[in-house]
Length: 208
Image (cartoon, rainbow, N blue to C red; front, side, top):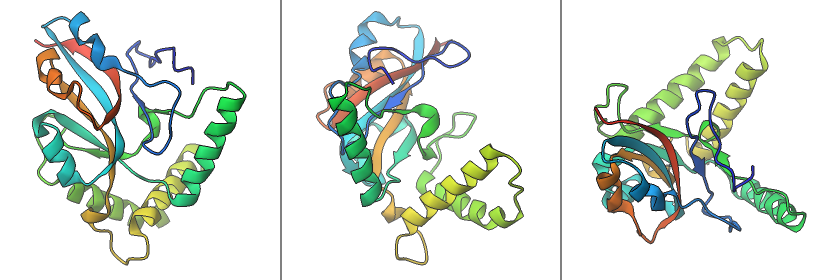
């Protein structure tokens, strides 16, 4: 992905980009600087990529909780991280764009309902849904590539979070970024926070 270009979805809306905390990129999105160019009547979403991993509780203390709508979880083991670092190193040597994750290729959980209502303990409900999904896998038809790939990825994420334990605990979750929503004044609260590695603007809508 060319970091100098802004990706858009099929509706012509910006797609958010996420940056891994364990990779040193040549360039980072810094869309928070665009706030002054956005009208006061606009409402927007923005992806924040962290410089390191944090627990859910730590994140809630670092960023105004009412702004958080989605949490990006860590889902790569040590070997997968090493492989990705190797690929990015080789890409840099050949001047090939580095591995940046698009909003539709990252895993995490919502902090609000579809009606915009805050969810209490969203990490708990995320794990409940993941466990339920694992139980349903045996009864799921795999007659398409998309379904098969989704099942493989669900198993991979589940096994990573489970580790050597029988049960997955919310304490096992590590957060490497979030999505926040609000108007330009709301998002000024996160400007210049030292633990934020990159900011990537998403959909912008009219406030009213």
